[in-house]
Image 1 (spheres, one colour):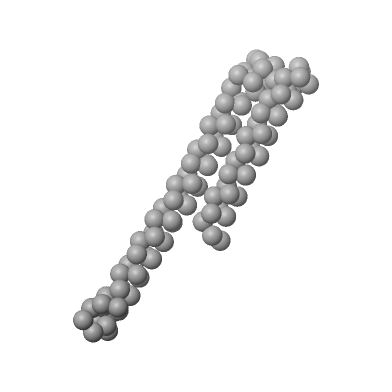
Image 2: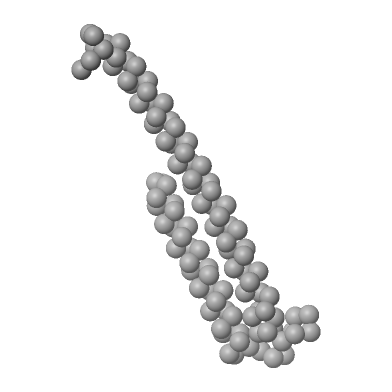
Length: 101
């Protein structure tokens, strides 16, 4: 898969995850079940105060790790292409009389 396709797919997946986290916060704030508690808080308050932030930070951490991997892959590809071009240039210089084209 091309690196730009990986970047686009990662960005779309992250966007959808963040939209899901925000939508979950809105849903539980409006229609939360008051009988469900977390740490003696109604669940929708817990989600709004703590859960959404933790979810967003987790999504950001995963996104950052994936994008760093893609950037590393891009640098490796660029270095490989540079080395290949340098090798081709050295062969061309040896095969051309006078060193000019």
